[in-house]
Image (cartoon, rainbow, N blue to C red; front, top):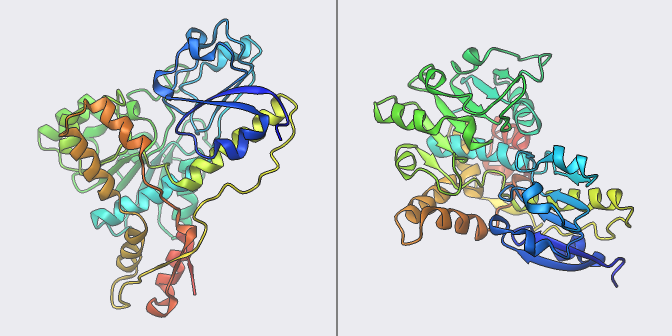
Length: 377
């Protein structure tokens, strides 16, 4: 039975909409990237992901009285205008942080990079970067952090110091103004400081890196390892840059089913608070919750090698890389192909859904897998 009579317009790619919002009224699913003001003519609630620019042009003279973004970022929301209009809004900070951190370790595993003995640099230490930092501390791996908004971080370093580390992970939000803008923060000068044997992983916002500067640097033979999950000008990404990076994926680092469902759940809670609606009576919505056994590698492998092989049995980003490269060579324009890959993304469960065969692991291997989120029998 419906508890309310709202009209909710929602991005069709938000999972479990019926489960979390079906009790509130009518759900209207739309493609988020092409959403128009006309589609909001009768909408009380707008639910989006990061592909929809929510601003005065979209919302003026519509009845929308709540905006929820089921993603961690807010650079696609004109929050100042929303607040001026008295329209409550919410994002879902941290909902997919674990998914992105798992992507980082799986990317390193796919590249054959042993993280023991390597130093890490983190640019942006919010929900994602902070979780990565805690994981690294648990693994006894040193890291340096650049985040001007968090000067008291115990691992605080300058940007130049971070760029000298062995593995550099970019998780900063996209900020274009104010005291600490991040737009093109990693430009030609910064990219030139990265060591040739380093790994650069960009999984925050694409325009934090000057993509043209990166393209030209790689063309000239600068050969640090580059992993890009986020790109400038998404979804119409630079195919020439894709050809030169070591792993390229279509902005899916945070696309675990767990992360998506957490975002949906957080926005339902925010909507209930904002409009004084009943809380969702549904606490489930989690699919595929069965533990799945990981086929464990031989004990004779190094600890990190064994862990890496186990992780790749759960998620191998090279499969996403192959799909993106194939799409770039296909018949669809790059922008449409990029969005299609995101829309049709296969179910990916986080490490916590899996267990390792303890009999095939030594104590150090079991400990590392446990820190990364797996259980063992």
